[in-house]
Length: 175
Ligand SMILES: CC(C)(COP(=O)(O)OP(=O)(O)OC[C@H]1O[C@@H](n2cnc3c(N)ncnc32)[C@H](O)[C@@H]1OP(=O)(O)O)[C@@H](O)C(=O)NCCC(=O)NCCS
Image (cartoon, rainbow, N blue to C red; front, side):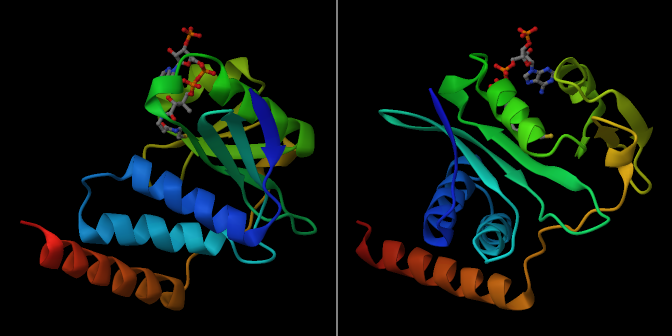
């Protein structure tokens, strides 16, 4: 398994679109549009680092980090491993690489994943403000504010238009 940063914005866009398609297969137009818009925001220059885990026959998983800004922490915004590769240490390898890049790393997760992240070094925890998620940090400093990757209206509209066009095209050509 190889772990690498995805530096080229177009590669990032392609990869995150693939992740959106894989993780959201069968979802509603709105769900798929939201994921694609986020993928598109991840490709913008200045968005955070994307880390890829891959093998010869394809991608295994990705970790997306929020942008680094002075005085702010970096958040592990997304961690995703394709189903057939789960339980093989791919997620752990991605998280370890993320911590290597940003020792003061934070994340938000559901309580059932707390033990998983705790084993990987997220030792400082607090409750999130507006939901049942927990905020984890590798250090106390990791709990500072962070700059989220946020799709704009333009990202969103562009993705919805493309999805609608794709659905129309598929309908036109189905039996
Ligand atoms: C969570 C996820 C990233 C783990 O990736 P992975 O490559 O399978 O994880 P690893 O192989 O490194 O670790 C496996 C361990 O994590 C545990 N684990 C995995 N998913 C878990 C979950 N949802 N709740 C609790 N434990 C979980 C496994 O039980 C296993 O424990 P063990 O080592 O004691 O057997 C992967 O299941 C995934 O992509 N899930 C869907 C997206 C998601 O939930 N992302 C996290 C959002 S915060």
